[in-house]
Image (cartoon, rainbow, N blue to C red; front, side, top):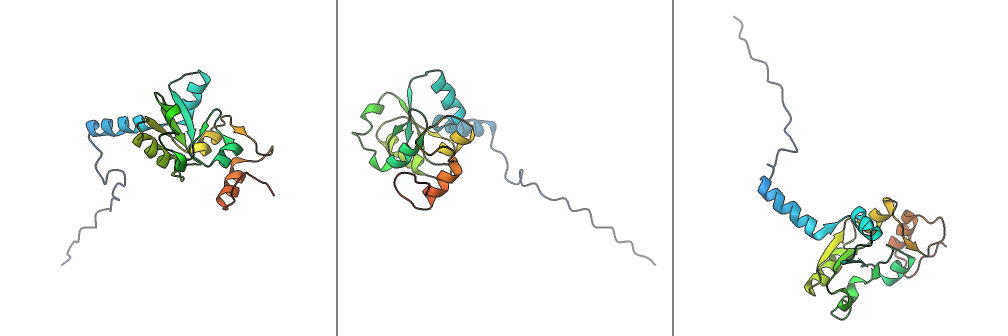
Length: 167
């Protein structure tokens, strides 16, 4: 007498994508519309700068020394710790597009929060200066020729203060 044991069904791995259900289209619309209201990217900023579009100002939330070393052309140096009502008087009636070093730096978010608290409409430049540079966009810089953004960032994150020095 032989008993037949059915084989185990094949194990189908679960979906990491679908494990959490997707939001409804209405919820997704609200989410992404809100993100677009508070974020922009390097390509859009560069295109508007090249077209001479007004209505916004690019704000560098890093230190004044970092701004002097390298920044988005025409960016206003406004270190986030120095943002107060007097500092933002020149920003009235314009959207401030803030940035810092990269996505791992929250100085841009801190600046954006302070600016918004003072009544300035604001957007965050996604990826900061690093994304700007990696897209091949122009910068205003006093760094020695041939200094890469990566070299400069490593130097900065090594805790050195003030202006860049290759030595």
